[in-house]
Structure formats: structure tokens, C-alpha cells
Image (tube, rainbow, N blue to C red; front, top):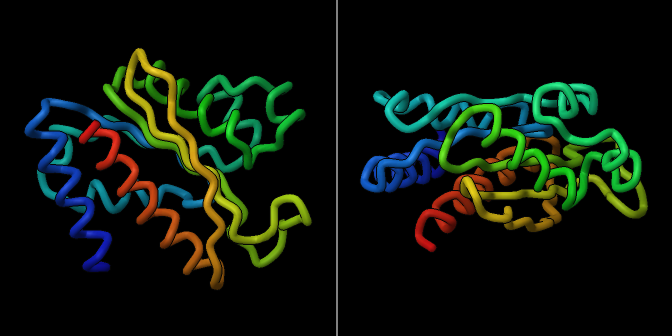
Length: 162
């Protein structure tokens, strides 16, 4: 396993356990990679509820309740969509907090407005407005996705510390 990812996941595991919190994930471009890293840790069922892999727009709508009009207006890779992914993941899982990732990992699919490497993240707690952030990564598809997983895990750690 990737030592950097493993280290962050272990830190997140300890913080979640110490605070008695449960997390869920809503992933698009990372394809379940965040959930995989978290569930590689023995005993993760104590603090990991489930992961939603919502790669298509239809999946975001059906599984997380993201409004089709929002996707139409902003695109799947947007602040509004990742915030709704967090809200939907918490509502449908009963978890205390969630993280969401949606981006353009490449090599194709980018645009002038959202070039390859553009990734939107959101993190949120039950009952609070999600925090969102856009990052632009460089590298190939795998490198972009790995950086997105690192950012998602670090953001979850930061959310717990607030």
C-alpha cells in the first residue's frame, strides 16, 4: 500500500475513533479509491459507514439526490454538485460526516473552463453546511487521482479538527 495514503488513513481512523464519529464517502473521479484506502485498515467498520461511487450524472442523482438542474447548470465538476454529494451521502447513510470528490482526471474530458486536473472537493458534518474547495492537479490520470485521494483524506482530518 502507498505509505503516504496509509499514514493519512491511519490518522483519520484514530481521530474518528477518538471522537466517536462515522464517515461516508461520495466519489466520482476517484472511483472508490478513498473508500478502499479507508477500508484497508483493519477495524474500519467501527468508523466507516459506506462509500458511494457515483461516476455518472445519473448515479449522482439516483444515489445522492443531486438535482439534475444543478448538474445541468454547473456541471458535475462543480462546487454546488460536490456540496450536494456531501449532503446526500450524509442523509442516505446516517454517517456523521462525509467527503465528496468530483473532477476531470483525464487524459480527455477537459475543457477550457475545467481542464484536466480540475477537481472539486467537499467535506461536511451532519447539520452543517459543507465546505468546498477546487484544486488543479498535474500529472497523468493515476497521479491526478492519487493526489485527489490525499487531498480528500487531509480535508476530512482538517474537518474533524475544527
